[in-house]
Length: 86
Image 1 (cartoon, one colour):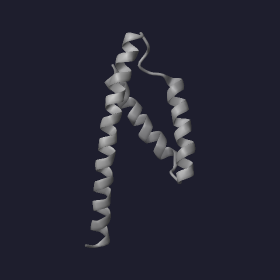
Image 2: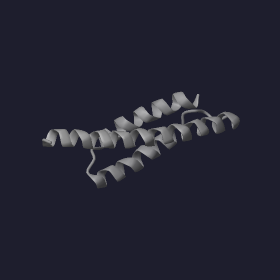
Image 3: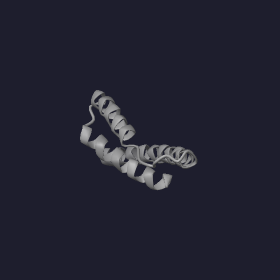
């Protein structure tokens, strides 16, 4: 097997793990949405979002991950989460 094929197989395995984690996240987001509805809270929480992004950026820097990657990925996750919570 050439190295490109090997790396693609590695990516496929990583993607499967990401999908499983994404499913877990969706389940938790659904629960959060129900709690927010019961308590009359807004779906969006800008201060929580900002704090979460800042924490992730610090962790990402320690791992050598560009902060723009983190911002883009988590803003997409937040957008999806808000739709699920509604």
